Amino acid sequence: MSVEFQAGNIRAGNHSSPLRFTLSHLLKHWYIGVLMVFGAIANAALWISIPLNVGLAFDAVREDQNLQTAINACLLIVIASLLRAVVQFMRNFSAQIYGQRLERDVRDELYASLLGKSMAFHDLRPVGETMARVTNDVIELSLMMHTGVNLLIGSTMFMFMPLVGSPVIHPDLALVPVAFVIVQITIQYFFIRRLYPLARQVRSSFGVMNARLEETLEGLEVIKGAAREEAEIGQVNSLIQTFRDRFIAQGEMEARYLSNLLFPLTLFAGVFHSAILFRAGEITTGDIVAYVMILLFFQFPVFMSLFTLPRIALGHAAAGRILELITARSDMDQNEGGHGAELKGDIRFENVSFGYQGEQDNLRGLSFSVKPGQTLAIVGQTGAGKTTVTRLINRTWDTREGRVLVDGLDVRDWSMASLRSQISIIEQDIFLFSRSLADNISFGAEDASREQIEDAARMAQAHDFIMSFPDGYETVVGQRGVTLSGGQRQRVALARAFITDPPVLILDDSTSAIDSATEDLIQQAIWTASRGRTTILITHRLSQIRWADHIVVLHQGEIVAQGSHEDLLRNSQDYRRIFDRYETHAAPAEASLAESNGAW
Image (tube, rainbow, N blue to C red; front, side, top):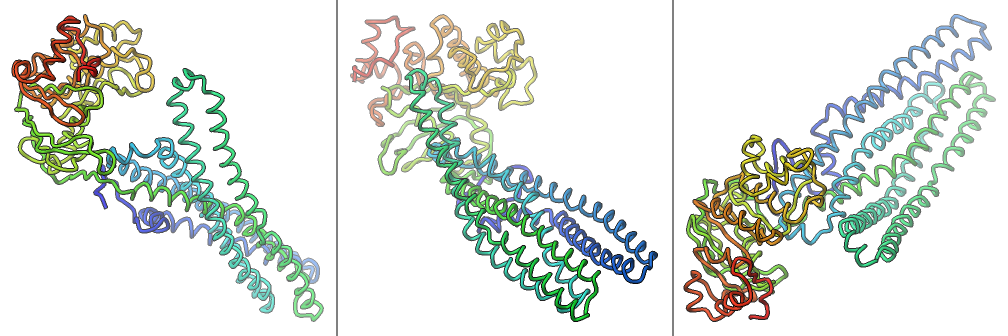
């Protein structure tokens, strides 16, 4: 089992089964559960006193004409009702608190677990399916507690109280309630066993539907561009139909709940039995009234069980889905007790091989090094493995063979938090949060002042366009920064990297969406920012490759040449062919290796 990321005071639950997982979180707040159970018992006990006093008052008025006895009985009924209101409020309030704390604790553990999973785990799992578990399944746990377990405990107390109240009237009257309880428990046992698989199918189909909806919305631009709206509507409708069918199947199971028939049969048997005892002179008319009222108690557990058992089944199924996510194997170890120190920036690859899928390697036998403060450029055609190389440095992925050393230490021996906090990566596919520009720039340096934010923006040539917005740095960008142009997003990302002042800066084709004039300015900023830190460039721009201290040329996952720009021009035919081609056909400052696949 992998070591998962845990933050703050989050305590993991028991992962051996969904039931133990839920109970382990509930036991953290056991005192609330005690209040809830006490409220349920007190409520039922006070309620059972009402029919007994009704019967007493009935006999007093009908037989003895003793009004004081009837008045006293009525006063006891009023007092019991008032006390019931108090304990019922306590029970419901405790159940709500219990449910909300369960939801909070499970969500915290689940979120911390997801942050600790490797990119391999997240890349192979649909985001919508994960979100369904993080949101709806966790809510199902809360609903299971305060509208499921709470009402089940309350109704169960009502089911057992007739076993106490009936013998008070006459010992023989306990026969029908005992029979009801035995049959009702048997029915509930088999009902929940048949209901749970259906509830799990309902939650599973909802997750699949949610995943497809999320994917459709995420790729909406592609769908509209290809005029595939009707096809996607058909696909989503099919998943909605599946969810609907499984939900209806659960409803059909609930409609066949035998306890709906058991209650009227119990009531008939109880009235018949009490009539026999009345004819024998063993009970009074008031006793019959009290006994029938007690039998009516069974209506509440029958009705509530039909509501609460599906709720509990859905909650238990949700707990299982959440537990699957938490315990899913992740090959990435956070290594919280690993090496943590100020990073110098000495990076070395020793015979590194890596593959995303099984044994098929995307990188094979890579060996190179970059000294602290140097600039390394990685070049090659699309798909050569350039970005993959950088992902091995900060342990987004781990090598299959060989080692990646940072400051002479295998990256797997570093504390992941310490390692990643000192490596800043700017990707070609920029991700911005749906927050203000100031928050996006200061991400990773939350205590940065406005002056530091603006300085970083100026260094990245972003300050001017930010100030052109009406709200300036408080402008909220859309999800993933869609309200900004590609060049604007990249400049905001550059500012985000500059503000953290990392010892290692990785630029993954980070100026690809910037015009030549702006690129010249940003290139000067990058040149300034790279002084005193290790910089790794993945670029197609020869103007940036020229000033790198060391250049690695990749081809189909292997190093075909490496050295300085001058060395490669002299000794590498592949590198020289690419460079000569673009010195001939384009200005060096604007030449791009992105179109150089044919040169290989």
